[in-house]
Structure formats: C-alpha cells, structure tokens
Image (cartoon, rainbow, N blue to C red):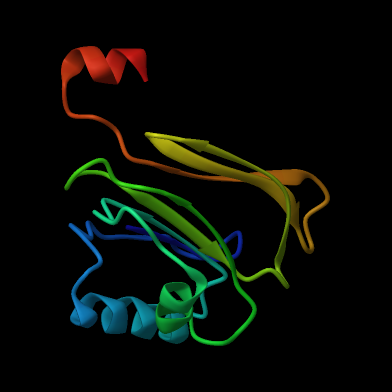
Length: 129
C-alpha cells in the first residue's frame, strides 16, 4: 500500500497482502485520519469486488472517489481512493497491473497522474509490463 499526501508531504509505503481482515480496515482508516491523507493507493487487495460501502468503511464519510482493479483468483487487485474536494478526476485507466487517474489537483496548475502498480513477479511478465 502506498499512502500519498499533498505535494511536499511524506509518502508512506506498506504491503497490504489483502484487505479482507477488519483489522486492516481499521489500521488504514487510522492512518488516513492521523496523516490527513488526500489519496491512497493499495496494491494486493486480493478482492474481486469493491463497492462504495466498503470504501466508506475505510475512508469514512468525508468526500471520496475511487477506482478499483479486481484481483485474479487470490492474487493482485489494486485500489485508488482520493478526496474529490482535492482531486477532480478527468479520466481513469484500469489495467490488470495498474490504475491511473488523471485530474486537477487543487492548488497545482498542471494536471496530475496518480498511479498505483501491481507488478507481476515473473521476469517475462515484468518485461511485458
């Protein structure tokens, strides 16, 4: 999992290894609140489906938008969540190995890309990515 803050703030990285455990929901929610995060990217969700109710359990009830790439069997899965009062989404690209959101980050003149990547482990798969 990669947690992102506004430009100039630290980025925290942590491997999630699945999001099904309630304890992980709580931990992620606590980090979002304590660090005042505006965006978060999570790899290895190991989930085939995520809905807004699930997102609200993690993000809370502040403004949120998200994009999700499902896992294949029990591996992979990517998730990006962000505060839509901070990032105005213009487009989304979903690939089995990464998610990309293009938009306007308030306070920044140029458009920004937020990307989360779940890279395959095999050498030939990494090369094709």
